[in-house]
Length: 160
Image (cartoon, rainbow, N blue to C red; front, side):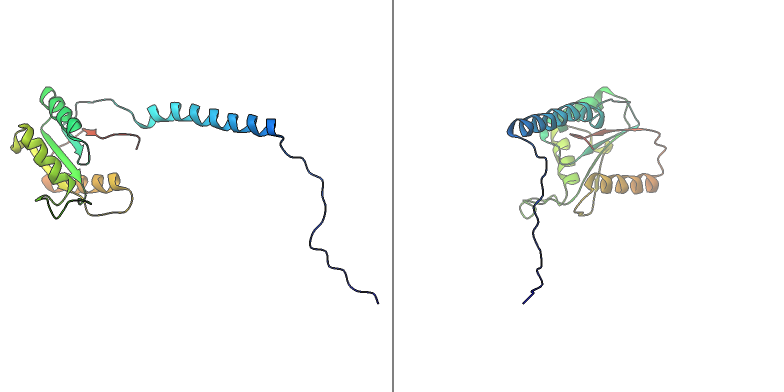
């Protein structure tokens, strides 16, 4: 009786990394990653004031950054300080402020900033691209305010 033999496994020779090979490979990957981070982060997180017409501050920044923004505003030639940000994700039931833009504006006011030069621009809730959504709302506000703005400075943290 001649039965049909079905092969589902075959034997092959192959080259693979030894323990030393894996160590060298992993060290190369880690070293490359560290080098990329040190090169990319300064490029993506550029910090250079241009003394624009308005200063835009992201509302999620901590209080010490808001204080620094106010100090820089007062030493610059800005017309307005604009805060942006979406809905509060925690503590919104306890706070009178519904968005990070309003909360940052209230904090900046408490620091002693002139409210006539302060504009909070709330951003709708989005799952991703929050900075982009804030930029869209800022652009809408600039169009409706009919202001002649040629440049602006943005206060934020980290790479974007």
